[in-house]
Image (tube, rainbow over the protein chains, first blue to last red):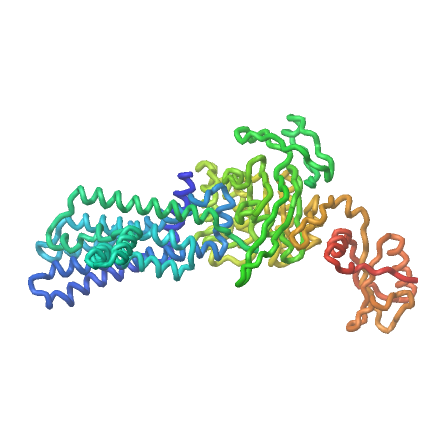
Amino acid sequence: MTGNIVALATSTFLETVRDRIFYLVAIFGFIMLASTAILSPLTVGAQSKIMADVGLASMVIFGLLVVVFVGSNMVRKELDKGTIVTILSKPVGRREYLIGKFLGLNLTLASMLAIMGLLFLLMLLFAPGSFSLRFLGAFYLTFLELTLINAVVVFFSTSVSPVLAAVFTLGVFTVGHLSQSIRDFGQMQGGVFQQQVSEVVYYLTPNLEVFNLRGSIVHGTAVSGEHLVMATVYSLAWTVLLLVVAGSIFSRKELRGE
Amino acid sequence: MIIQAPVKNRTLDQEATGTPQADRHSVVTEREEVSPSKPSLAPAMVLEVRDLRKSFRSGFLKRRIRGIDGVSFSVNRGSVFALIGHNGAGKTTTINCILDLVHADGGEVSIMGLDHRDPASRGRVGYLPERPYFFEHLTGRELLKFYARLLGMPKNRRAARIDEVLAMVGMTAYAGRRLKKFSKGMLQRIGLAQAVLGEPDLLILDEPMSGLDPIGRREIRELLMDLKKAGTTIILSSHIVPDVEMIADTVGILKDGCLVAVRDLDELSNGFSYTGDLALGEAEPAWLPADCRTQNDGRARVQVDSVADLRNLLNDCHREAIPVVSLATHRSSLEELFMEINGETPLKREVVR
């Protein structure tokens, strides 16, 4: 079982590499350089903070783009083209297949974040006094957040078209960052209905603000070990839940019509 | 009723376990016990399909359309079973249900004693789909490595086995080329290579020769003949009757989702027939039926069933100086049966005197 998952994950990773997904990293590097050159004169005394802000936000955006657009197409492409039938005609379970594809994309994500993180730290070396290893916490939280989003896109891609899967996943990403605010807003409203709706939204969508400590990290606060552990558990719990449901849907799916 | 395909090559295992050779087209009443932990004691029956049913929902109103209905047959070790039928008859659906790529509405499928829904049942199965499509980002060799890993092939055996199958399908020279640059014929060959990679006990091929040029078809056919000689059990679907006649031992004819006939080809094609193309020119012999004469090129195609009729035909042509452009010998029985089942008139013409 593990061998199958590793084989599928490796193949998926190789596919993204050969599809030149990593070109996005070059764009990231360009944005980092541009932020230094263009924004620095406008931000006297806060150059390093602006660089860090732009860098961390870019990492999330590029990671999100890869996960959403590669992930939404990943399974559907194989269903449409038929590559999946020769794979599943081997002793490979459908859940194994899905987990392999998920892990392959996550490996791509991890590699991209690692390269972008390295570029980010190298750029900070040129801004005196701004280099700090506390940014590693921000990288890790971004990885956890996008891992969860990867599971969301895999979940949607098993049941709806790639376009809808991408739209729904971006919706979950947006609502996930607003879920706490939605809940607070609902509590402030007098009506029971609004309160219940906001509670439902809060519990049905992952709270992605758990992973968003970028602002405080940029301003010099390191992430606590306790928070990192809790965020890891939170991300893993959602990921496992989504993959279990996705696996169940995918197991019942007809892979070929007449 | 389960219709059992004949055993062509009795294996040593069968001899050793004393499994009796099944009667042709006999009704199977008991399923053989199979121990997955003892693959060397492989059963005589490689595949058993019982009352397989599948329908699809289609259109805005999601109306049910019958895919296959009550398909039952079994295939014994070493035999070649062909599913033939017109387009949409249910050949691919049957294969997809066997491999659990689509979920059957009902019925049972057992692959070497294991339920087909168990992924382990596919461990000894090789499959080539119709219009195979593989990861374009991989090279031929990388693709086979990927499938070798999925098959759980030991690492130290992979390279040698991959070289072996690449040579078998004539793709050694292109093994380092990415699949996106492969032609249709090359994809078909690499598809066949992945299907035979794990030295399967059961090889399932869906239209293996469709879309190939005549040379490609011949090469694939020869490869299948070699696999057959090596004792591989093969199930193939096709609507190209002559190809089936050359390879298969038994044919199952599907019509509108039902398996309407299963025949042993040896029994079916005891009689040969002969087709002669005659260049009539201005000559119009009285003995030639009017509908044998073609309107455009002044030629006629005449089919006769016996050597005596053939001799008479040639004598007549010689006497009346009618050139015989070509003369072909063929076994037309399967084609006739196929046409008859599908409600078409056979091509055959009688020489009327």
